[in-house]
Length: 118
Image 1 (cartoon, one colour):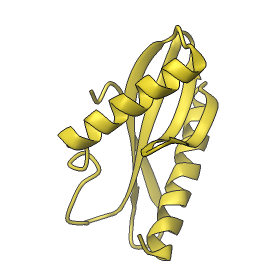
Image 2 (tube, rainbow, N blue to C red):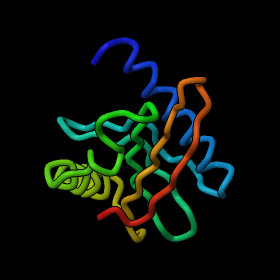
Image 3 (cartoon, rainbow, N blue to C red):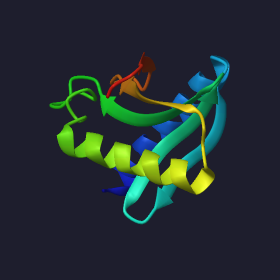
């Protein structure tokens, strides 16, 4: 990943975190990692722990944020969530969500929150 891509991704995660907070979520973790598993954002909302994948894309890019959630990514997200759940002995309901950030050519962003991607 190039430095520019990393900057765009970090900006997208900042935007997603702020969006979640504005909508009543408590941010538990950001960029949580264990072994080869990682989770962009882990947030709590009522009795549900949300494992949130953040995808930031330039408008008109060749792959949409939704298309990037393939079977391999789903397996990875599930394994990461199960590892987190075991480490923290969670009793919450678990939900997997996607926040798709789109950046237009002027730098303006839009946020699309999709619940239950798995």
